[in-house]
Amino acid sequence: MKLEDALEIVAQTHSGMVRAHNEDSIGTDAACGLVVLADGMGGYNAGEVASGIAVSVMVTEVAAPLKQFSPIQRDEASGEELAITLLNNSIHRANASIYQAAQSQAQYAGMGTTVVAALFYDNRVATGHVGDSRLYRLRGESLELITRDHSLLQEQIDSGVISIEQARHSQNRNLVTRAVGIDAEVMPEIHVHEVLPGDIYLLCSDGLNDMVEDDDIQSIVYAMQGNLALAAEQLIQTANDNGGRDNVSVILVKVKQAFAQPSSFLARLLNWLKN
Amino acid sequence: MTAKLILSLDGALIQEYLLSKERMTIGRKAHNDIVIDNLAVSSEHAAVITILHDSFLEDLNSTNGLTVNGVPAQKHFLQNNDVIEIGKYELKYLNDQVSQTNAADFEKTMIMRAPVLPVSSPADRPGDTGVFKTADLRADRPVATPNAETSLNKPVLPAAAPLAPPVVVRAAIQVLNGPNAGKELDLVKGLTTLGKPGVQVAVLTRRPHGFFITHVEGANFPSVNGQIMDGKPLQLKDHDLIELAGVKMEFYLKS
Image 1: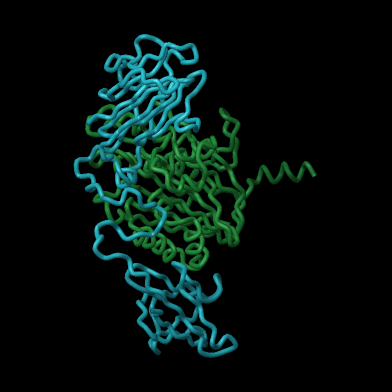
Image 2: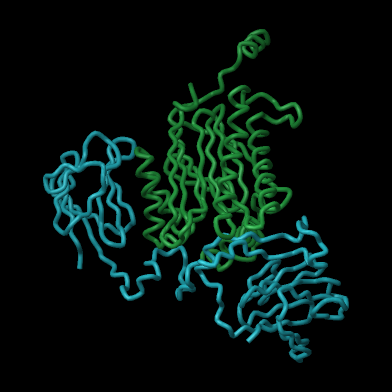
């Protein structure tokens, strides 16, 4: 099963009702099963520059090697699967590129970006994120948040300083504790999850989940799963109807069929010999 | 007026400190801006970072920690009358200036720098490694809106239209034929689904300016007043007649 036939991908972004600029960037590569979303920060157009660099660097760094190598082969240096190594490295590369640009050009000083990325391979998805952009999964009727924000608010919830109910009214939203491009080093969070046919994955910037309750996100994605483009449009429209105070971006990925990595002739032969 | 901290012990006032610098440190050693000479206090215990009219408190990995209004805190956005406790000492934060940083500014994602990995040459700011960096200093930031208290999660009209209080329009659909004839469905949610996901779906959405019907999937497109819909959303009027896969429904507004 080819990856691009197994996955349906829709990506949309909107500057919202208040902001003049759209500092979000989105990128997809259906052939290698990669989706990337970034929410930039910085003065003038630096936010767009940072998120734009992150998306283009990550798509290039992941897609090019996967044209040649299998995502499940082990990387010699790290011992991890190539998919995981590539995703991790691509965030570090993006960090280095943004950091260098920010150091060398005064108008970009201090710029940075969040990222959330998902790489689908071999009936799994490798996820990588930095900051407060999110990945949700709809499985059956239930919507689950897969990523954990790198934000002050999440830290406060984790340490029990405030409850989730208090967090809804907190003024400390939107203070991220990690970002790509603001320091020489970055600490991406990488995980691998099993994927089932029928799953729908939603990547979004905080412009969506700050304006639309999770329950409403669930009812939109669930009701409109038969028409992903309409679902993306409806999510953005709801965020804007609720005030649209930030840029809002969504990427929806629907898993139509299983997509096991075809094993090589050699692997099959070895497997056959073992039995 | 500049914000200030009032240091007291057992209710007895010791000293007042104006938050006149961007970063003020609190600790036992003499080089701190606010010195509390007590062994329960770490040599550099905490810092207060003030940007415009807002102050943030940050614990500098002190041994005994600190609380704000009785709650242990690592980092805290200070509000007028907050009481910081360090050991037996109390620091009251007073700021009668209306905060210039309100909900609109907090929409902006900002980077909070941990006091590690100093970037610029340390000589620029001796001893200053932990900075709360507001990443966006754009001149054309949106004008501060007065609804700072509004919860961001509640669907509210944008502040741009304060003269038009949101009129909550209620509406419902009533089934006219078939086994469910007479049944009424209140459109209380933002989105109401007709049909079964994966097979045949139309949705009714509530928006600030009215109710809309949209075809989502399935071979049957709904019709409104006998007119078969295309793929676009259609705004519903009072007493519109909807027909979907043989089921007739009436849309009506409730006063």
